[in-house]
Length: 325
Image 1 (tube, rainbow, N blue to C red):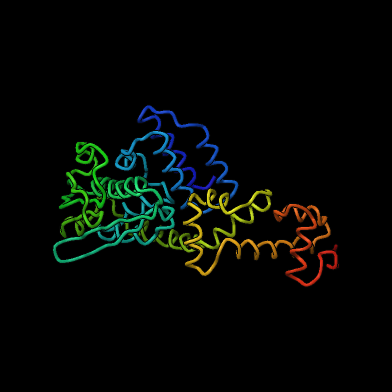
Image 2: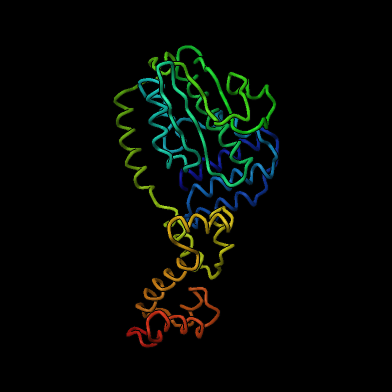
């Protein structure tokens, strides 16, 4: 199983036990379905978070997440953080590898003479999901920062762009400070001496070796949104069920968001479906293993006549004119 899937499966199981709640088996079925479809982990991860929140109503998931994510999770990012020379380098390097945590959030680092401000944002579709993910990101940062220093790290300030969604005592427990809400940004502020102080767990040689490996891995995970859509469309066509709504559901976004993101890339659902059907039709027809009826079914057409009509429109001749048919 892909490591990201294992991380989220572990997270769901841990949270259910911690909060004494029951997670429906359907969610674990979704995880297995996702594994077979090989769709974008970003949209799947967002869907898992949304479903857990919907099932449990427990918005404390974000704050508590830090205590269940061990250093080896998400491709050993925790070890990269822990072995850095100081907190500034640790945060900077993790922020440059968003694909390793499924692009769930983005970090912006703002340095000045007095310290470091780390801003976090994400593009989850539902408001409560965005709030929980931002709280999780800052909670994890606090947790690891305290873990690798000889003495508790002094945190100057924590702010959230959203309103309060948990008891203040929980924020104090997991962030070590009481945050302010409804601010322009979700962010955390470290003083200069805290981010430059050497880490207890620093291991320069291991850190450099791990960083190079993770950078190479990060580059291999660079599929664009359109590429992810194409992967899922091919899978859905093969299953015989495809529509704009089904595609959006598999990507864990709404139809409106799907079209908006495709439009940004000068694409549309119809144009992608047409190009993939043409590509697959040529591939199938070049093989002598498939009948026209079977190809029509695999491409989502109602019958061979509908497929033949479409194919003639693309190529100027019927599929029967192809040499291998």
